[in-house]
Length: 351
Image (cartoon, rainbow, N blue to C red; front, side, top):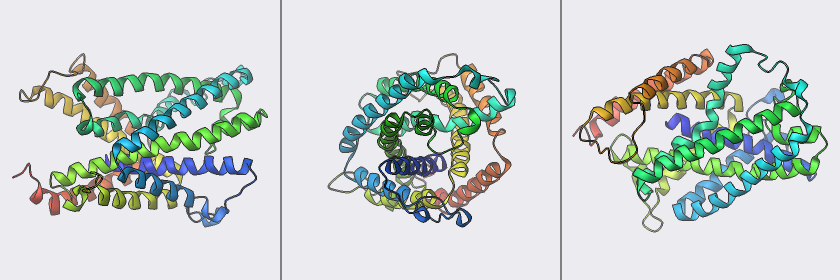
């Protein structure tokens, strides 16, 4: 989950940087190419400076407290939804059904590979769970927050995908800012500008939520003894894990500054699928534990849904590249080494 959340922040920050460049270019302001992309000397880019800067700005906001960042997050989410609806309403008039033929150009295998990659879009829902300790009445509010946002966003995802691929052939959409790019192609520059602005604002909410989730994960691990205690120290004034936030943000910003977007998204998907696989099995094991409270939400059609979820997650993992699978294996080995060298002897549960 650290792999999932940390690299998700890096990946979204990289996409945010691309939309910022698009927005500024529309205002005839240009960030030097050398500091506007991941490390790729052949392409003239060395570091993605905007991605690093936005991570540190939002890290600073998180150190000031959850209530403060939640208020800003609510405003930004509202703007983001309005921009998405604007794109759908305007873009639908430029849809050419011929762009949907064939509707599945890569067949069933293409759909499955796409499903493994688009899993990245569903990160925010499990991030809600990382806030459980700071939620009033989590038994009731957590399921509503997760399932409600899941349904709403899935409808919006499908609508945007249909309009986008209807406006522009899918072969032309391999860019970091496809939505504003599509509007530029149909000469709706004013909409493109609003979308770029909305994306710059809206993607900040994703970075904020995932960065919050990442810091709270490492906080929980540290509190339970699996990581050094510095990661669970709470600032006396703001009641936030300030040191944790800056350490985590610094490591994530390195990935955002130097690793290409396509590599980040594959790794995030692998981390997510792996975490969901463990959760699916965990539901079965926890349901058998009579000491666990069952007065809140219970997964329906138990154990069928957890088993189906487990099988599908494993299958989707096989659709990712072999390099991603190898890197994930290396990551797990590093995690096991940390556990057996440090975590096991300091674990409060083991004591």
